[in-house]
Image (cartoon, rainbow, N blue to C red; front, side, top):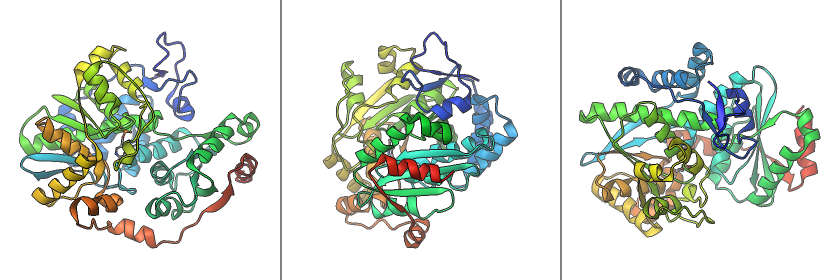
Length: 429
Ligand SMILES: *Cc1c(COP(=O)(O)O)cnc(C)c1O
């Protein structure tokens, strides 16, 4: 399988999986996509899903990464997915696919863990440095994704005093090959520093650096796997075959991966793009006009994206035809007040604590009378303040998070200065 940029319509620059993963973004500014979309056998998927998530994921992964050694791929997938996933009936025949039982208690673990393990394989023993700036969540998912992966080290820059204690604990208690730097500055400073390192040819000749941001092919492809699992579990629970699937969205990697799964053979009746007040995509679906703009802050802040990168992948999946994309998706959006009252409603009616992002999914499922499931993208305990405010209840920390909060934290102070960062990267050897 080769991979191309969404913008390389003449298919002039094929890349192997390793090159595409190393580059992240394609040189022409597009996003990597596969040259063709393989079909999977849905009955096989259903059988394997009963055995384990990892078995099912390894089967789908082998179809889309057909030039990797299947046994090595299987090993990597099993190492990545050593945590539970479950379809949960909230009540009244309403189902949600809980994707937040991984090490950082958010669905980004599905992409980041897979990327960590597979990048370790593709890198073939060479020393690789993953360099990432974070305002909190991405850094923790990437740190856990690559933790303990041989030959790879991760350097994470985060703004000192500007991430939550929980996020800081997730980045700074792993040790080993994970090197967190607390930068005396803002998130924008962290991003600027990282960009400067990537532009520094002299540095790049000495240190092999790569990014691991959310548009990376190795984070995107594995996000299609859990749709298959959700379908199999929902079919077992209800006896029906074609679910509506609601996806709380921000940068739209998640939904674009669902659309990819559908093209691999996944039966879906309707996909719903569910957003918070940052409603560029629902607005596009309604009006036909795509109007990217600066994001606004909401309680579901991981979805605060005003110019979603993966819009380009969604269009590509529709052969570049905006009208085809409008026909494929339904839209839904809601503001902060609605999100909090949806969280309150779920708690009052079903005794279920939801985080604000997943509550947008619940809201869309109710408003559109969806018959299927919504994706739950984060654990309620990660958003304890919002949960308290919406329900009056406490969302207890899962034991693993609590233990992490008590572990000793290690990070290195760093001035917001390119010279200091360059020196540090060199010193790692
Ligand atoms: C990243 C994230 C989202 C949005 O996913 P996209 O793929 O960017 O659309 C939703 N919820 C949570 C909790 C997230 O961390």
